[in-house]
Length: 121
Image (cartoon, rainbow, N blue to C red; front, top):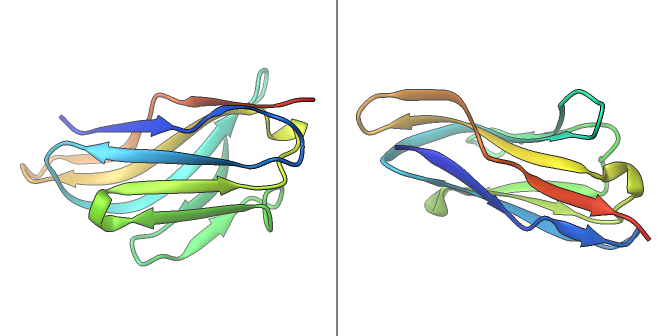
């Protein structure tokens, strides 16, 4: 059973930082693209940042210069470093990945359970 487990959410004040982690576990052969999405109350889920297996990154305009996505392939883990957080960054953050298991099963995509990030003074 392949799954993604997120951690690192919480309540912070505007201008502060948080680092989210998303660890993939199970019988994993390879992980292709990885990404972070977020969903605020009453809004659609939106892409925050993505990273390919080769390390190419892409960001939503609203987070460029403040957020950094990275991955540790040896640990099957992706990260989202969030700096200079704003109240409008408040949302549930979900990680997503495209994973192939050793049994040849393709999980495309697979989602984490979500972690709440609240930015408020």
